[in-house]
Length: 184
Image 1 (tube, one colour):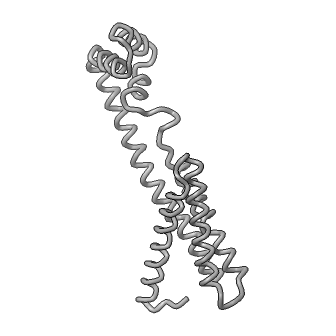
Image 2 (image 1 turned 180 degrees about the vertical axis):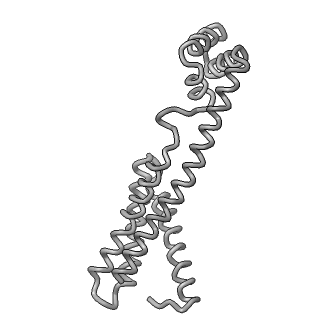
Image 3 (image 1 turned 90 degrees about the vertical axis):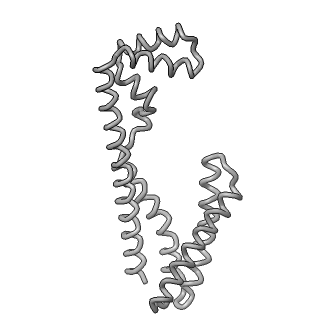
């Protein structure tokens, strides 16, 4: 059981990390392509890009004269930076970071997988399935509530949602195991 549990933890963490890395790398590629395209537009039509930036500031509430002044000054200071931030919505804080995302995903999966594994190790032989199932459901309730609390959302709604989908995932996994003759 220990070997299977640790193998599942490592495999799940690697799966989550690799999936996150691929996904966020694709986002990063798109961001770089958008920035390159914006750089080309700035070289080809600087006046039009200045008007476009001013229009963005008008939509955000500045009057036309002030928006034009701000756009011209930002274009003189760092045109590509201004367009990257204000037109594309990309900044140092929001830029895709594939390695960071992969590590965070692996760590989160591992943190979620470790407690049921520890419960299985601490439970008397023959009671592991029930103990892990009950503990996993309790962990899902708690983690759903904590996530909601951290995000300022409704804790009960989040706890129910996370628990429902976690229970469904466990049931489907157990069902597939039963179909193929795996016994717990």
